[in-house]
Length: 171
Image 1 (cartoon, rainbow, N blue to C red):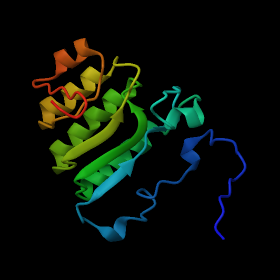
Image 2 (tube, one colour; image 1 turned 90 degrees about the vertical axis):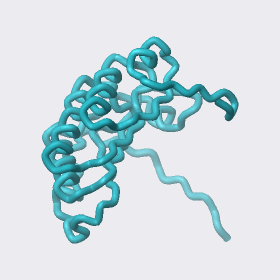
Image 3 (tube, rainbow, N blue to C red; image 1 turned 120 degrees about the vertical axis):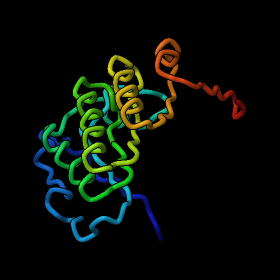
Image 4 (tube, rainbow, N blue to C red; image 1 turned 135 degrees about the vertical axis):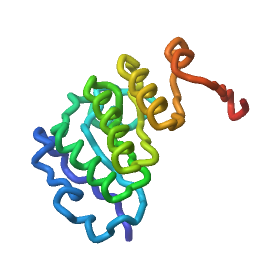
């Protein structure tokens, strides 16, 4: 019979750079330029305990960052290998000032290599301090449209050309 087994709690990894990068180790090199998508992390953790999300409630802890040069190197690997879509697995992309620099790096790589074509992320929920600059950088430089679910309407009005409001499944 099947049963549910729960493993014991364990310490979170304090130094994320001890985790090897599969991109930089060459584990994906054999796939060459297949044009698929890639998942990149620049940090882990979430300081929030939102009721609509299990991410932060699972950790509600200090966020830990990967070295920024490592993130850039992984992004460049993706661009050189013609990865069309990069999905950023951060829980709150835009929460740190360095996320603006990451957005600029993505634009730079697109202008150099023509890739990535799209960048997808789960944006910061409880702060919009850096979000406007990230959205404007990516949109103005790459012409990429961003789907934004945000309740700070003053910020939304400043960065959006078009706004569609969905109310209980209808716009």
